[in-house]
Image (cartoon, rainbow, N blue to C red):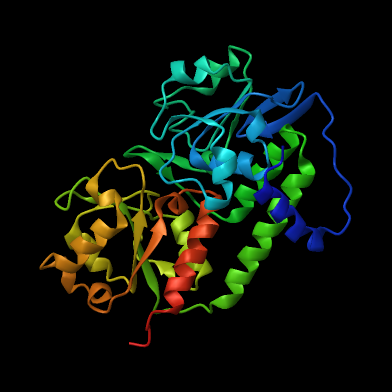
Length: 336
């Protein structure tokens, strides 16, 4: 059954789509995905989503009845998808084992990160599933990252945009034979993206520091940089990422962070509870109370905003996160 939120999205989008006829998928369906040709003889009925974004796209498409399980959730599911997600088995919020994935007998596995399904994955390689006759799908956002010898998360040569996410939604909707739902979801997200872009003019004096997490205050912080989704959010809101590192997930000590002198600090709320500083409130407490770090201008002027950590991954949540930052940004005094 297509969940209520997906229906709501479709109704909202119907204004833009008009009376577009339902585009039925013809099987066998072969799609090109991250350099591989994947053939589907029929729509999946028992899918596994590795990663929050893969799961939330399926839920947005109203596919909860065809999902066997999910894994790897840095944050809680989007509120409007909670009811649908409640009926889907959660293997773990962290990296699952290959055995646990196979135990639910999937007929399709989709993943949002190469660390979840890739050559050096902690979980599995694509061929591990395909050798068992289980087709796979890897997010286009994941395979657009190039390898960096010193960083398992890699880097992007060009700025990530929502176009890669729209491609992912389109592909998955065709695979599951729900192309009309995919068109409705994409139309809704595109309208929201355009509305957000129109709210903010480009400013040369606006930069953002995106702090994802840290094992402890003494350790280097995990930041969101490079040409990744956080830099896209900064661009969408008229600014730039204060961290100029090539890597998508650079780590930096606080002396180096202070040198970036951001206008606004974005403290990510990460719900997985791996480290104390996953919590946004703990990040803010550190920023405001550390005798040295608290001297940063952004901290002194109260320019700290909160965003879900999932938004720093290439995902639906990236746009939701941008919308949350936008609301908080408009309440800040950026005049000085």
